[in-house]
Length: 442
Image (cartoon, rainbow, N blue to C red):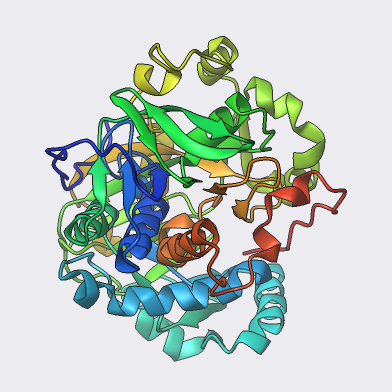
């Protein structure tokens, strides 16, 4: 079962017509709705389950510039600026604090990759630097060993995934947005070849544009429109502890574990290296497109055959708009966490930081992350369907970049000048012969 998420009450009315409909109530969807409402544009956000019910409440809570793909750097810089003023702007608490993030190098090869990344990031002046010795030891008190070095960005931060998206959704509602949980969108209507409305389980909403921010569901929704989005899902498991003291303040990643302090004084703990990849029919359908990523990340991937294969094989690819859709059959993706692996991660953490010994484990959960072949999101208009904007495939980077991605999606949906160049995020890159480039990451 997933974490407890701050609730957002249903609306007391159902809008018949708005300028823009946002599909999906995760961090990107609610940020899009908020950005539109700020501009005085009428918007309805439709979420099949509850706000932040899936990966937007299940992630690590990191808000980072460090380790980003070069193509994401301009967007994450702007997104961090939005995070820094977000609590004041929405008059609510997202839990954001700039407590710093460390990417630890335990061997020479990792240190070289950090140095190479710093070279790519240098033009963006993001404030990330390589540290070692006493400076690093002082940031990781209580460690039983000295680490070789680390990338450190003191202005990187953390926020609370169970609070952030609901708080932004409520702020969007205060500005006039209609926030509609338990309202699945079954499909998009078109008039003269462009978006003219959506059909939901509760009725039709006329609109001029749609932002599809459906996370792991976006591939299925696109397929129903005749659009091929090469997107797969990977599984991430997370552990939450009870409050504790005497442990590091910055978030940290190592090959063996990753952690960050929570606002309640506990910690979120996860595997630092090793991503579970459920094999599904789309794994084979998109094998060639994902081959570069498979080669680049082979040592960190754990391919597995589980119930996701038959679930997706049996899932309908088309459906009538006057009958329940797959989005109503499954309101929330709630996969089973790999508890045994998480306890091994905790054992490795305790070996390095004995202060974690004996801490109470409050909960374990898992989430399915939407990934693209180049691990860079799609934030893009679609030539074949004017009025549609897709915002998906954030590949585990979406929480921190969410406010900026929402603002960019709002720009594209309204025809405003994009506040960052969206070229790298174009949907067409997977179909126009562009090479799939997987940047050496951290």
